[in-house]
Image (tube, rainbow, N blue to C red; front, top):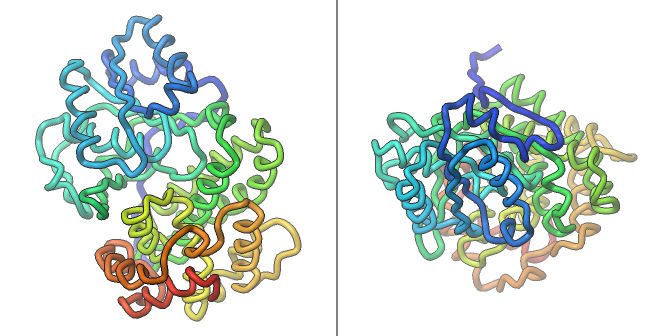
Length: 383
């Protein structure tokens, strides 16, 4: 067996109601004046007020920053840091999706005052420490609560990642009750995103290892066996918790065996056309799976065995199952249906080449010509 290392969050807590009693976790990490980072949508739904009120009732001074947007920009990060400093905070809590958790991770490092954001982009570029950090996901998709990665929009159409174990939080709190209000489309996009994490971790070229493999397989089984259930019965807490666990396991897998071409080609779609990240992944998934089959046929067959129903244990079985799920979920199945013009494909392929941090993990090399062909297949719905 080749040597490998595996890292994850020091403490993971799973259970209904934990999100409304974060005081014990704050006390454990020495946080008395937390900055709670979230988005306006969750505030308007009334999901954040009970979390804040419970902390205030136990003597905590809470500052709330609800300025997180999808594909958060450097300006959002800066505004979050300003809220931290003005509030004289001593730690951070994120309650939300991947965007809120990514912003909190970066602000936690910036608040330590040892490094500028521009110096943090890339792999293992973070120096020094961070402030105490608790992450509470409200979607079953990104797995950001257990990953050392934060993705920030750096320009008009560009994104960059910060990847460092320093970003792993002190505590991840999984409360399935927070995901009950997730609409069907968001459930589909985030659930497929999580399954892409599992698939790409299982086939990652450089750092695939027995622990990440185990987690990826378990993640795919939990997610695939429950996603249609949460479509039909969105208030099924047990199914929602299974999705949340699957998302976390997939996050732990790809935190150690990184994702590859699906994500690399998805990022320009988000940057240029502001498609949700999970939708961008679902649009690129069938084409990339077909492209990688020559190198991954056996691995794809192993993944297909984790799927529900009578699925052929083969690469074709895996791809067909995903195509059926994407269609049945009601999401667009092609880039054309998503409103992407064919004239944009060459530009997207050019921009995807900037994602070498991810492309190096793909089991089959992807150059600009290959990326153009993959976008063409995703646009037309072929593979």
